[in-house]
Length: 459
Image (cartoon, rainbow, N blue to C red; front, side):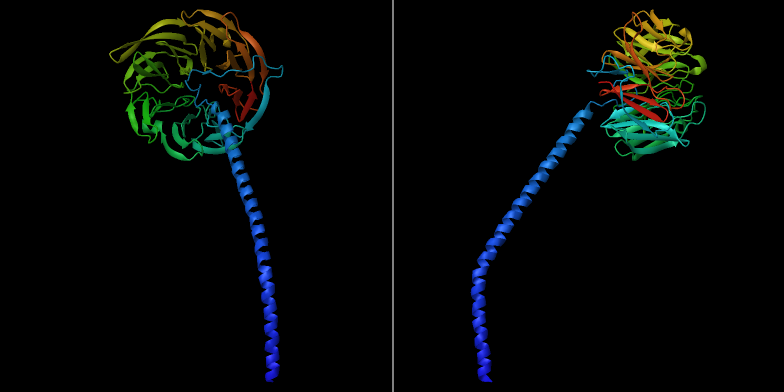
């Protein structure tokens, strides 16, 4: 047995020695293979990481490129950055094809209303009534709806739907519903920051066709006009909704107009229309500087005032047009009438001042024709039917006119005659009149009609 055990042990030792030899020879080979494999994997990992890094850089560059493209897309409030309804961009089409410029896309589901669009930071904003609620909508630049947020109940009276256009200020959006609900939202996400009903807060009443102003941001203040027995205009802290100042009451309800802020002889003034007049308020203190009567047919004071070199112009239905001179002395201001005209009585399509002439459409006087008035004298230069009574905007040397019955015209602004260059009709489908003002921004023409937004390439 001992010998068997020894034999077994002896054979085992021999096998062990052989295994050791094999292991000694194999280990370097295995290590070399492992190192080679690791090196290959490492190179693959590094090259993949570098590719991903380059891809990220490309994505960032693409994003930067897109941001650069949309940086020009800036029309952050009603009638543009300066509220003068004038675009400064260049390189737009000087003539359209017979069928009109190319339709890039159509968005629907915006609700009914007459709000136009505001554009900032690669997003488009508007408002409409959906199922008896006021809804603010944000879209991307391709027309995809990104979010929709409620701003109180909708207006269901005569001419139902929204009126005011959202105002974008940095990262925040402000909007006033027809029923006086003022809301501040995060512009990117639609998250609500604060809300306030100005009719309730200031004990005022709504007007016949509902509140229509597009809110004005002036520095840290948000300007709105509730009208009524307490005040004609208030400034709210745009971040907290706290009342900064409250102008004296003119003992009348609000008008339908949107305010502008101007500076003349060192005095900053906010100008707008009340239901039966025109007011100027010290933008810094809230002092009511002037209140002059301007009573229109059915109290439809809608026109956004036009200011130039110390003079202010307004127009309204049947009351006609008036230009005043602003006089400033000792931080006080008053106005004196320069001229008055019954040739132009704008309904709610607005006007544009270009090279010493005003372009706008009439209503009762001249039967809704397009009118050109001399800014200095008030003399009418022409009255022509054109595309029909409506609204307008200006870009790159030409007027873009939209009739209340879907006709669009490209018009040369000259006092000699109504210079229609091209025209077309937007598609049928939107309910009611096409009253939302057109917008030209970053080579695109935006036309809102009811539930639809049509976007055309005009570059």
